Image (cartoon, rainbow, N blue to C red; front, side, top):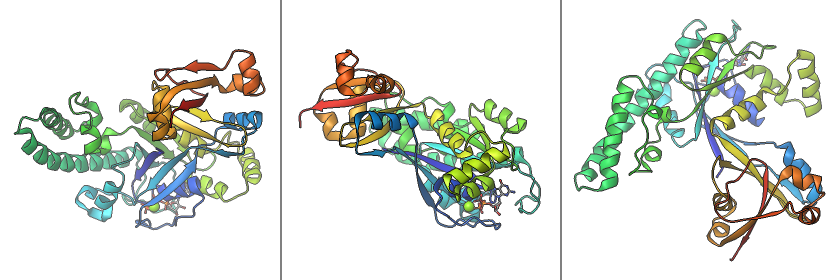
Length: 361
Ligand SMILES: Nc1nc2c(ncn2[C@@H]2O[C@H](COP(=O)(O)OP(=O)(O)OP(=O)(O)O)[C@@H](O)[C@H]2O)c(=O)[nH]1
Ligand SMILES: [Mg+2]
């Protein structure tokens, strides 16, 4: 299943500009708060140059990169959890995402209106974090009422979920995120069912002035204090670069002294949050694909990413590191060198593995 990421931030923080850059979709970015009134979903391929080499080696017919979905929502203001500025509706749209990208305005362009009148990254972060927590609090209280009814019957999972929700509510009331409360062992779906916004990992994106790619120290310090990561981009510049041809954009980047695409930093940062590894499937004359899997999961889980039927009929897997495959000039050479391994369902997948699952239909 593809990874889903929700973009949050204050009005005019630069969310849609970042989103546009990510998609080249051209969702409207304008100097007007609440420009985004419909949720937008951008499907962004996660380019992986290792797969390009594998494709050339095995003679695959085409490349299909795994994708990540970015959900752009309207800006949140104080009171958003109560529906202020349409925010509430949008918060519901990102309950089912895997991670949050929190865009923080850190550029000083006076031509861009700030809803609070002046630029203040930490104040803005606090506003957004408070809104996310308040929205979670309401959601958790509603859920607790339902679960408490089920728990009365003595259902073990419901009892565990009730206890966990009670703890989560207490944490939120102390101003702590849901992610600080360990999920209950007896109710493995509790966290997913709540879909707490403060239960998700966060990547702060500091939207900085053009030509800079350092995260302002106050944002970096805050991110560290809450166990999050931070990257810097100029959302406007990235959205302009995204509109250019690739070679033009590269030349422009070089001129500006920017080492790599800010967007790649955002995508890579988001993936790092989720502790994902990449693996590949590739065969001659067939499409080669990249996939992602949580670190520590097995060949059996990898099979499930590819197709539920392949997982159901799993017999064994042929596995090889992508570099070994490329260096051997293909599967035949790899087999001769003894580099193509047979692995069972419990084999723990490694980043860059190329896998062929043998299964009974
Ligand atoms: N100078 C400068 N302007 C920017 C940057 N990023 C965004 N802007 C401008 O800020 C304004 C708002 O940007 P958007 O991307 O629409 O902001 P948003 O967060 O989506 O706003 P809402 O959807 O209203 O919540 C636009 O005029 C952008 O061109 C930046 O990095 N530098
Ligand atoms: Mg917007």
